[in-house]
Structures are given as C-alpha cells and as structure tokens.
Amino acid sequence: MSNLSTKNSLHKLYSWLPIIVLFISVLNEFDFNYLNLKYFSFNFPFILIFFFTLKDFKHFDYFLVFIAGLINDTVVGLPLGISSLSYTLICIATSYLRNITIRPNAIKDWFYFLFIISLINSMNYSILTLFFTYNLELVGYLINTFFTFSFYMIFVTIFKYYIKGLND
Amino acid sequence: MASSRDDFIIAIRSAFLKKSTKQKFSLLTLVLISVLIILLSSLDFKIIRYLKIGISEVVYRSSFVVSIPENLIKKSVKDIVDYSTFYKIYKKEKNELNQLRSNNISSEITQFENKELKELINNYVSSADKILAKIIVDHDSPFLKSIIINKGSKDNIKIGTNIYDQSYLVGRVIEVNYKTSRVLLLSDLNSNVPVTIAPQNIQAIITGAGDEYGQIKYIKKGFTNDFSEQSIVYTSGTGAIFKSGIPIGRLKISEDEKSKNYIVEFYSDFSQLKYVFAEVVTETEIVSVDEKNSQEKDNLKNPMSAKLKILEDEIQIIEETNSKFKDENENLKSEVNRLNNEILNFENQIQSQKKTISQFDLDKKELGFLRLNLEYGHKCRKTFLNIKGFAVGTSEYKKCVLNKGRINE
Image 1 (cartoon, chains in turn yellow, red):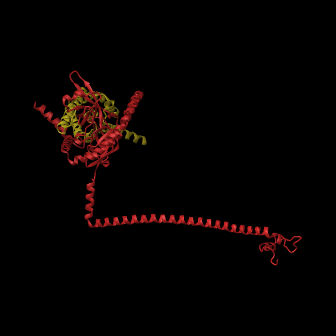
Image 2 (image 1 turned 90 degrees about the horizontal axis):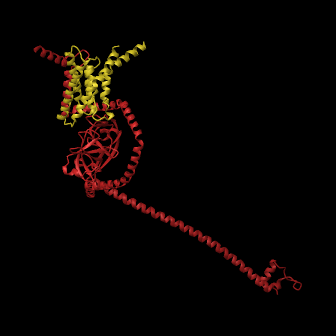
Image 3 (image 1 turned 120 degrees about the vertical axis):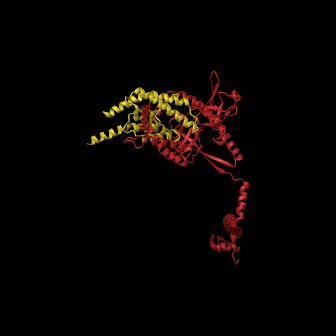
C-alpha cells in the first residue's frame, strides 16, 4: 500500500516536472553563462514554454507561467511585467498554432518558434529602449535568438523522451 | 478568401479567449495584466514598487538557494583553472604585492592630507564605513550586468551607494529592498562613470561594454594622442555620484586598421566576486568655534540655564578648594610625622648623653679616691707599725682615705 502511494507521489512530481524546471530556470537563469563564451546565451524558458504549451501539457498552467515571468524580471532586473508578457505571448502563439494545425510537423514548429521568439525579442528590445531608456546591445539579442532557435531541437528531443516516459 | 479570414479570426479568438478547464485565467487576461504592470512600472507607481520589493525579498533568497548547484559547478571549474595556473600567478602577485606595499605608505599619507583638506573645504565631515556584503545572486546575464547583495535599507544602503571589491570600484546600488540590493556593475551598458585618466589628467566618461571591460566615451579627439598603456583610470568625483580617487582600471589601446580603440581593463574581475564592500556614508556637521561661542551665549540668555551655569561654576570652585585643602592637610600630616621622628631621635640622644655623664661622674669619684689613696693610704692601711689602721678594700679604709687619715690623728 505504502509502495503504491510512494509511486503515486513520484508520478505526481514527475508530471509537475516541466513547471518545476521552469521555475528553477527563471530563478537560476539557466543559460551556461559561466562558460564565459563571448556572446553565447540562449533562452531556456522560451523553449520550455513553447514546447509544453504547444503540446497542451496538463500541468503547464498559464498563470504559473505568468508568475515565472514576474520572477524572471525580478532576477534579471528588468521592469516588472516584461517577461510575463513575453511568456504569455508565446502561450498565445502556441495556442493559435495548435488551433490551425491539423497535422503537426516538427520542422514547421521549429521555424514558427524562430518567428515567435524573434518577434518577442524585438518587442522586448523596443519596450526597454523606448519606454525605459535602457542601453541594450542588439547583437546580443540576435545571437540569443539564434542560439535559442538552434537548441530548440535538442531540447525537444529530451522533452519528447520525458513525455514518452510519463505516458508509459 | 472570406472563409480563410474567418478561420484566422476564429483561431485567434480561440487562442486569446478560450479557457480550457485546467486553466484558471484566459490568456487575454494575463496579457492585459502584464501590460498594466508594465505601464504602471514605467510611471513608477507606488504599488508596483512595493510589489517589486516584496517579490525581490523572496525571489533573491530563493534564487540564491536554487543557484547553489550552479555555483558549485562554477567554483569547480574555477578551481581547476586556478590550480593549473597557480605558480605563475603566485610569482606575478608576489612582485605586485611588494610594489603595492611601498605604494601603500605614500597612499595613506595622501589620504590623511586629503581628509584634512576636505574638512577645511566642507562644512561637514563625511565619515564612510565600509560594510561587508555577500553576493547572493550573480547570474552574469548577457543583457544586464548586475549583482544582488545581502544588504539593504536596513543597513543604511541607499540608491547610489558605491560598491567596492577591496579598494577597487565595482559599481553602484540601483535598487534597494529591506535586506537586499541590486548593484549595477561598471561593465553594464547603462553604467556611466566620470573619470580622470592619469598621469595625463584628462577627464572622461567610461561606460560599460556589456563585457569585462569599459569603453572611454565623451572625450575630445586631440586628447587621446597622449594616452599610453600605463595610464590609470580612477573616478573624478564629478557629479557627486561616485567619490573621487577610486581606482577603476588600466587603459588599454587596441588598434584596428581604421581606428584606435581605448578600453579600460577593470582591476576587479566581476565574474569572480563573492563578497563586496558597500560604503555607507554619514555626514556630520562641524561646529566652528564662533558657532560654539554663540551657542553658549544663547544658553546664557535663558534664565534657567544661566542659574544652572552659576551652580555648575560654584560646584567647580568648591571642588577646587576642597582639593586644595586636602593637599594642605596631607602636607601637614607629613610634617607632624617628620617632627615626631625628630623628637624621638633627640630623646635617644639625651639618654645616651646622660649615661655618658653618669659614667664620667663615677670615674671622677674613683679618680679622686685613688689620688687620696696614694697620698693618705699609708695612714689608713693596717701594718706592723700602724696597728690601728684598717684592712684595704673595707669601707672603714675608704672612709679613712677620704677623710685624709684617721680623725683623731
């Protein structure tokens, strides 16, 4: 009996794992910056949110994503609400894609992801420079978008294994 | 065409408004909340400020805990690199240390002189206390170069507080919470510091490059010809944002085909910071001698304080008199003791003299007897011819000698 309850709680924890990883990544700013590679950075939360909202994952609550955005703003030092808006826009984009897609295609999703993150990063850059007079390096944003796009497929493979493990 | 547009609108509406059973909020609501928060924070609304402070207090601590594994990896990587270059660095630093020790003495003298001169110039002395602060969050973001320290308004940290690594400038505080603060590093693109470049003594502004170095900006073209690789960059204090004379880094010239670039290599390695010093400045006004006197005069105008002043003076006089009496008393006591000792000595002297006198009297008597004995002894001594005489040593004999012979003779 106790074995069964342990199994259940483990399963619960496993099913909540994506949202837990999202919170850890925003708190920790998971992007391998400590490797000190010039210009190297990528946005892991974007990949995570895009993938799991596209799959309409049951424990990936939009409100929690919104809260994760607020935390990210606090950690990074951006004005409150910027990341929340970005994350929510990704959710809208994936919801729209889900509605118009009949036969999902990984490559199409990938390029759609590139379009969405480019749009969101441009929006972020515009808001920060125009409304908050931040000095930001555009090259940094472009490279961040490029690496986020490049790593998408690697992480998608890992996430697929995770979902497969959950269904089994 | 019309049906395709309808499909698009339906999909969009569905994306924005459709709220499935497991979602608590529709995406449109969340977007509107986000936009509202952004607008309010751009207008610097109080509610948003307090909300941010509240979130920051919790998030910074959580971020510190969550970052422990990453920091462990960072530390391990750094340790490995350190061990591989250990000896080389040791040799270099030993030489540097010797040089710095000699420089330190002259620097201390300059600091004292500087402080004295500032006291003369200003009406206040700014005493700065450096408090040690631990870095709890340092994510080295590619966009914003900032760190979070574990000191906040509770420890008198204010916006603009200068932050140091040893004696090198690291940045300044841009956000203060109750127990934490955010420090904008010099390497950030938004950081602008007015500096002096020595020994040329040229004023400039350095801005962060978003990397581990700074860029020199706002300087006239002709001045740059004087720069050399040995030039030192330190704060000029212009604008009163940073204190003057804080070392920042060394100038480095990098040449392209087209132009020369002047960058500043910071003395401090911002990626390796663990603890920093926050300079908490407190200003105390100096009261000049004239002001002091006028304050005393004001006090005298008040009758109550005047009475108190008189009483205080009286007490002071009494205390002074008392102490004088005490001293005199002590002197008299010691004089009495000295005289007593003298009397005792004299008494002893008299006693010994009396003894001598009595001895002298005794001797005199004896001598007189012996003289008489020589002269009249034969008359008193009992011999064959003098049967009526006395035996020698008897009291009759002595009496007879003293009487110069027998009385009836």
